Amino acid sequence: MLKVLAACGNGMGSSMVIKMKIEKVLKEIGVADFKVDYCSVGEAKSQAGGYDIVVASKHLIHELDGRTKGELVGLDNLMDDAEIKAKLGVLVSEEV
Image (cartoon, rainbow, N blue to C red; front, side, top):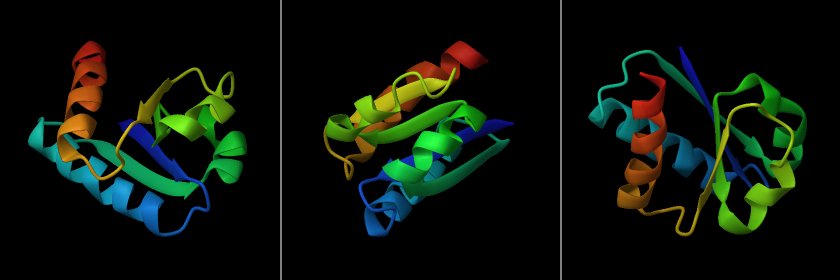
């Protein structure tokens, strides 16, 4: 199972939106077995180690350096489905 964590500054609205976008993209690219969680970057610092991919905005992702053996994905635009699909598509194809 692919485990993905979406993180934002406060762990409220934008991380929930990113979570839903990630779920949509994973379905579109044919990933059947996945789980997507969301939280603040502060919470992600202690949780990131349990995930294969951690997604956050580019200006926050550096805070998670060294906290997971998984992949860190920094997004320029959290609302851009095409960017999410492009970045996750590369990582997911590597895992298959």
